[in-house]
Length: 327
Image (spheres, rainbow, N blue to C red):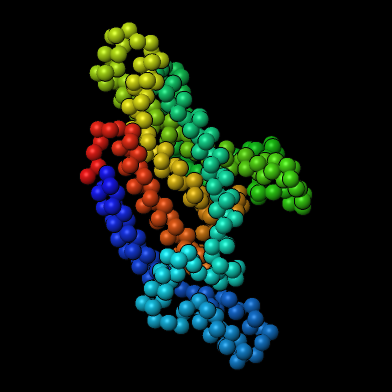
């Protein structure tokens, strides 16, 4: 186990280094000058000589006056020390900029995944147990429809139905504009604005996980040990939950672990449509505003999340099923 973890960590380091070089070079090739954007607002209020001096100072501050190789090693070394650079748009360190959106994204995704698992796992189990019944057919049809509709279409439909036609929820935003709530009322207002994005995300994710749980449990129920357990006269609930579902957890584990890691990743479409100030919206805004320091830092964070998720998933497979040997 220890040897496997060390090998995977070495693999993660190599992949991280390669992707860091590729992404750094890619963002450097994108048109735009972050230093010019930092001083553009002062162009009309100072002399051309002063403007050029401010521009050169901004280039030096961002490290753009150095050769590309030096820029990369400087950026990578600073990143390892926790310094992800300086936003050319917001004029603050990237780490300070990402903090509040990260909290909003974690809150949104945490509520979403808790509700999703509470609905889909029991639904998938019941659909598998009642295979080919009217209930199972209804679940199958509903989940196929849910999977077939893109999430942005689902979001627009729900906004039209529940924010415009029936104004139950706000269209977008995180707080009521101009309300100035504090304390408990502020928390309630925040959760109220959270409802519609979460409902859309749950509806969009319902089909995939429900069918995944159903399929995994059907595979387990077809095994010989289930027939043996039933032949011994065990109760059906014992057969399903103690024997079949425990083995069905093995393929589900990867999805669950990936979801836990994905809590820290933003949903770009949902956050943009609902003006939810999370990391997904921040990434899109930084790309639109050519704030590439922020975009690059967030891309590296997502790469690290993906690598960590793969390692944790493999380890969880081994813990759930002792028959799996990690080499």
